[in-house]
Length: 131
Image (cartoon, rainbow, N blue to C red):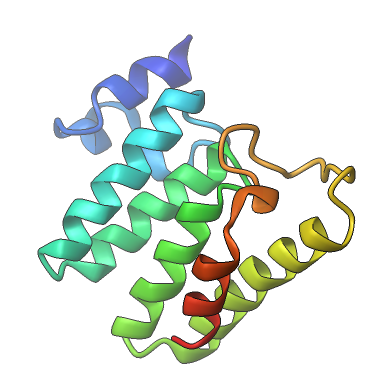
C-alpha cells in the first residue's frame, strides 16, 4: 500500500516527503509500468533522454521483461552516447525475442505478461537489429 501511494505522488515533490521513489523495489503494478513507459515515450519525443531513461528503469523495476521499456531505454542510452549500456539493452531485447521464437512455449520468470517477446513481429525485429 505504501509503495502504491508513492507512485501516485510521483509528479509531486515526493522525494522530500517519501524518499527517492526510483529506489523502491517495486513501485506498482501493470498500470504503473505502462504509465512509466508511456511517459518515457513522451520524454523521448521532447529529447529529454535522461529523464526518459529513469522512466524506463521505473517500468522495468515493476516488469523486468517489459519489452517496450527495454527497447526505449536502449534508444535513450544511444542518444545519450552511453553506448555500452545501449548495446547491453539491445542485446537483452534481441536475446529475449530470439529465445521466444526458438521456443514459443517457454516462459521466463522475468517475462512481462502483457508485452511478451514472442509477440514481437519479424518486421519489428528486423527494424530493431538494423538500428
